[in-house]
Length: 337
Ligand code: NAD
Ligand code: UD1
Image (cartoon, rainbow, N blue to C red):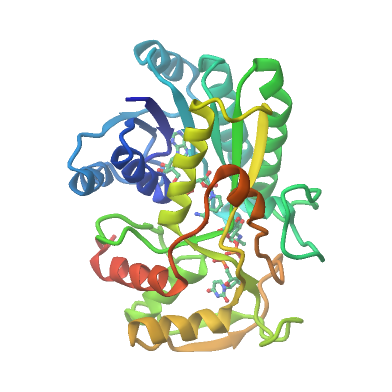
C-alpha cells in the first residue's frame, strides 16, 4: 500500500483528496497547521472511508518540525502539496505573509523531504491571468499576476520546473479551475471563514437566508449575457485528478521531470447562468442584483482539457447540476461557525 503525505489535507480540496486516496487503497498521512481548517475534519473523513487517518499538526514553514516529520516517516512514496493560503484579498493586504507561507513553505518542503519523492502541486488557472485566447492551454505563457496569491502560484511552478530536473524528482502541477461542491455525503465541504469571497459559497449562503442578496459583479462584459465566465468543476473530480497524478508518478509513466495539467471541465458558465442552474437544480431561489465589476476579475476562463484526458487519463465526471446540489446539501449540513 503506497504511503502518501498530504500537506494541507484537512482543507477543502485536501480533505476530499484524502477520501479518494484512502478509498483507492493508499495509506495517507496528513500534515496541516490548522490555519484554515479544523481538526474535526479528520473524523469526518474517517466517517466516510471507515479507515483511520493519521494527522500531524505541523507548519510546513517550520524547518525543524518538518525535518522531524520526515525522519519519523521514512517510508513515504509520494507527496501531494496543498498547504497554502488562498484568499486573494488578504494576499493584497499582506503580501509578505503569502510569499512566506506559500513560497517559503514549499521551499522548506523541497529542502526537508527526500529528493526521490514525487510531488503533486496545487496550482491554479490564475497563473494564466487575462488571456485573449480560449480555451486555456497548458503551454500558454503566464500573464502578469493580478495578486500576490497568483504570483505565489506562478513562482512555485517556476521553482518546481527548475528544481525538479536538478533534484531528479518527478513533479506534476495541477492547475485547478473553479472547484465547487462537496462530498455527496455532505460530511465534508468548504468551510469559508467570515464572508465568503467566492461565488458558490456566497450563493448557497444567500439561498439559506444568511445573506440578503448575491451581488453579480458586472453584467456588461463582452460575454453572451454580460457576466463573467468560469469553468466550475466538482471538487470530487479535482480530488480524483490527484489519484491519477500519483498513479502516473508511482508507475513510472511520467518521463519528463515536470508536467502541468489543466483540471477543469472544458465548459464555461456565466455567473447569471450559474444562478439559474442552481435555482433549477435545488428549487431554491437566490435573490441577486447586478453590481459593479470586481477589480482584477478575468472576463472569461475555461480549460482545454485534452492534455489531461490523453496524458493523465483523467476527465471530469460530475455534472454542474450535481456539483450545485452537493454544494447546497453541504450548506445545510455544515457546522455553523
Ligand atoms: P484550504 O485553505 O481549504 O486548505 C489549505 C490547507 O492548508 C488548510 O487546511 C490550512 O490549514 C493548511 N495550511 C496552510 N498553510 C499551512 C502551513 N504553512 N503549514 C501547514 N498547513 C498549512 O484551501 P483549498 O481550497 O483546499 O486549496 C488547497 C490548495 O489548492 C491551495 O494550495 C490553493 O491555493 C489551491 N487552489 C485552490 C483553489 C480553490 O478555489 N479552492 C483553486 C486553485 C488552487
Ligand atoms: C478565484 C480567485 C483565483 C483562484 C480561483 C480558483 C479571486 C479574486 N480569485 O477566482 O485566484 O485561482 O478562484 O478557484 O478570488 N462573483 C460574483 N459575486 C460574488 C462572488 C463572485 O459575481 O459574490 C463572480 C466573480 O466576479 C467571478 C465569478 O463569480 O466572475 C467567480 O468568482 P470566484 O468564485 O471568486 O472565483 P474566481 O474569480 O474565478
